[in-house]
Amino acid sequence: MSLQGAGQVWRRLDVTLRDLPLGTLFLVVSFLPGLRGHGTQVGDLPTRPFDALAVVALALECLSLVVRRRWPVICLALVACGFALDQLRGYHSAAGTTLLVALISAGCHLEQRRRTTVVLLSVAYVPLAIALARLGSGGETVTEFATFYLTLALAWGAGAWLRSTRAAEAARRERVAAETRTAERIRIARELHDVVTHHVTAMVVQAEAARYLTAAPERLEQSLTAVSDTGRRALTDLRHLLDLLSPGHGTDHGVGPAAATQSTQATQARTPAVGRVLTLVEQTRRAGQPVDFTERGAPPASTGSADLVAYRVVQEALTNALKYAHGSRTSVQVQRGEREITVEVSTDGSGSRTTAAAAGSGRGLAGLRERVDVLGGDFSAGRGPDGGFTVRARIPADGTS
Image 1 (cartoon, rainbow, N blue to C red):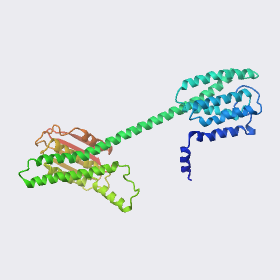
Image 2 (cartoon, rainbow, N blue to C red):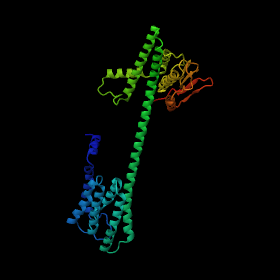
Image 3 (tube, helix red, strand yellow):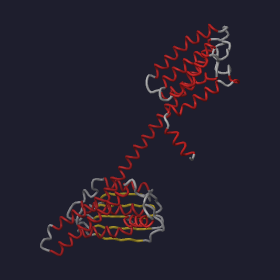
Image 4 (tube, helix red, strand yellow):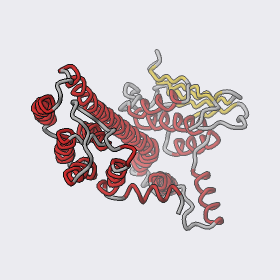
């Protein structure tokens, strides 16, 4: 078994089993001849050899650590009792160090009644210090007892710091997860808006026009065919988007090389590019919108996400033109250079509807602005003095998704 596999098995064990080796180690070390009588000592009681009570004290101090994370209060109480017996009997074993471990664990893992626990421990320390002072020779001063109490307080404080650090990290992770979920929902909504709105708008416009073509069967057939073609494209784009949202998308599990190649080719075929802007233009023209299209420049070797963003800019602008300025002459200009892609879509406002609302609800344009900003480009959209509406975008050609 590899170290990674062994680590996973270890983490799956109950916390009491994982804490058992620590308690066992302290117990074994406490019985080593060289360490007897050389452990923690509070007061000046003379050291005595181990006896039957020493075994009880060591068991309380060491074996109680197995529940230090599951029941921290019980662990701390048992260890404190064992420590008191250890000091009052004068064993001074190495197991006395477990009191600090129990305090750190309680400070870190105790969920409720933390202040009450601190007060009770502080109160319990006073009679222990008095008893040790009376049983000793009187050489121990109040300052030394206070110093040991501060050591215990520091151990509790270390556990409390670990607790706050873990809580802050958990809150940070939750915040990051929430922000990630929100960003993903926004991205999905933006993709759905881009994919669905354009196609559905074109279908609605084409269907409305078809109602007035009953006297012209040929034109009616052409209009209905356009509606059907647009619906198929919408379904294709929606399936592609659903594939991207599928948990198994992009994995090769159970898929052979031929199927993987076919899937890759299909994905690439459905990925919009600037070269496919002409398809958008033709579709918009069939919906009854006069569109002038100009494309200049040679595409660079690699454009990253710039092609997709440019495609979405044209798509959203043409969709708004269809919805809010149907019949108005629209101009689409795409300029491709080595460093950037420039897109400009303008509507002159001379159609059947006013362009006062050509910006639409604003959601699509806001999404475009975010897309362009992520790639470090410039985006603007607004009405001109002639009442038309213009969308401009400058997109760096080396942007990556």
